[in-house]
Length: 186
Image (cartoon, rainbow, N blue to C red; front, side, top):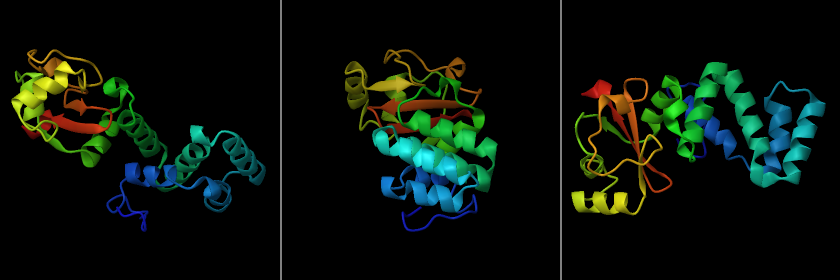
């Protein structure tokens, strides 16, 4: 999705991408969009914008705008899953994420089949997160790799018990590089 177009149809702009579009609205546009595009009372829109102006770094205005508009267009369930997926990709733990949030992640981050018994180092090396097995081992040794938000030794085999919702395993390198392993695509 380019920044110039946002679609109401979920097959053109996923609920996650739609939510993120509104999360990236400029501070100066918060009040106008709340007033024009949500069903919130005018006084509440003014109050949200005023609170946001006092602490813009907390992004409360964008968060509320994204939640309200995404709920109108895609429904409360998709909005909750989009919020969960956003939280995971911005540093939250995927351990408590819903299956729908993980499905949203699968459409947003690179995904490949899960193979039980492969070590974390070998799993990283098989993805774009590491250029080789030695690069993967270095990444792990530096504490820059995680499995489902937790640290795992490089030589421990990844098993089906690691899967979230008996299907997904989220690898992370650094703060913002993700790869999802999917047991359903074996």
